[in-house]
Amino acid sequence: MEIIQKIVDLGASVVLPVIIFLFGLILKMKPSRAFRAGLVVGIGFIGINLVIGLLVDNLGPAAKDMVERLGIELNIIDVGWPATSAIAFGSTVGALAIPIGLGVNVLLLLFGLTKTLNIDLWNLWHIAFTGALVSVMTGSYPMGLLTAVVHAIVLLVLADLSQKQVEKFYGYPNISFPHGTSTPYILFAWPLEKLFNVIPGFKNWKADPEAIQKRLGILGESTVLGLILGLVIGLLAGWNGKDVLNLAVSTAAVMLLLPRMVSLLMEGLAPVSEAASEFVKSKFPGREVYIGMDSALAVGHPAAIASSLIMVPIVLLLAVIVPGNKVLPFGDLATIPFIVCMMVPIFRGNVIRTVVASTIALGFGLLLSTYISPLFTTAAKNVGFSFPEGATAISSLVDGAVPTTAIFVFGAKLGYIGLVVIGLIALATAYYINRRAGKNQEDQRTA
Image (cartoon, rainbow, N blue to C red; front, side):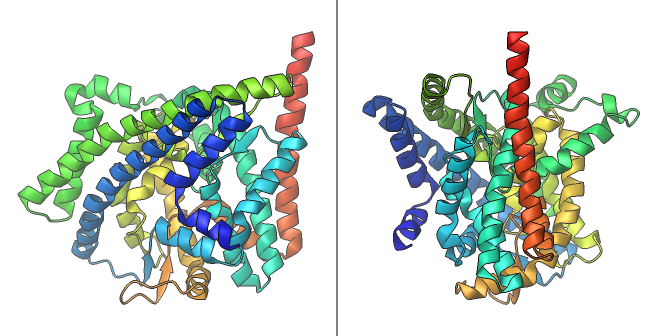
């Protein structure tokens, strides 16, 4: 357990390069090539974190001042994903999250029930989070472990289901996202996309970055759009001219730099993905494998960033007007790109559809994060979390507002049977999409 915790404490930018290097050796890549791939991925993650840090450092104070200007008084503090992940991994369930995630993945791969090989081990804190909440709620450690197991299955199934849309939109061949925050939001996006397609007028409204730039010219360019959104947020925060301009230029920089960092990350992943594909073809003829990665690969798309910046004031407004909400959004405002990035390919980059869907999802999400706050707060106390000054109750948008959190918290209220039913539904779906669909493809080839 201590060894696992020490590995977790190293962080994704260190752990993932090591995993990729070892994975490359297993795939029979040259050691020098595998080493370079892992190193470039690590550098890419550091670059992404630096850019996200730039956004956090500038957007965080602006959000705080917007809250004060709006006179919002909410008693549950959004502590953000870094605190949430630390609480999750620090829990009794969290100590086993990585072995559970690996074990479930290997078993599903062996039985042909998933195509995703998840190497994003650090983000298995998401399954630890739901496991910790259920363990606190039920007072049962085994139920917390079962939750983590079923959650790992669900994420792999959702990754497989969404892979083709990820590949088509983002251009990432053989890459999937079994990410605990981003991927579950496709459960909102799929039905809403069908609804949007039957609404007169709305269904024909093109609002992807290319269409916006075509209509608005230079005003529609991603960097200029970032500048404008930064100006709006700064003015809503009541800042002076100098600070508003600094925020505006910073958001413009994020719009330009984040896609560049994602490209660097993909430079490291590309040879590993190719080697994995060749390895599977040689060992398992006819089978396909996806490399499960962090959705940080998706947050750099202009549609994701633009939608996220628009959502900042909207989320703060929702916090005021949604009846029953008690959560003060703060720590996770700058990580909204991770919430919207998997909805973007479903809506084919349409910023308006993404914003509308995100508004609906986070409206419900605020209520969910309010509901789970007592469990979250207890889990934090159990690991000795240091609460922000004046805070007695905490929560988070990541992962407090995520659909899978609702599925497992409410499912666990039915006891073991609720969790088993969720697991059986996930496995049945996995069987259908990976066995039946594969058989149909084989029938078509032989016909």
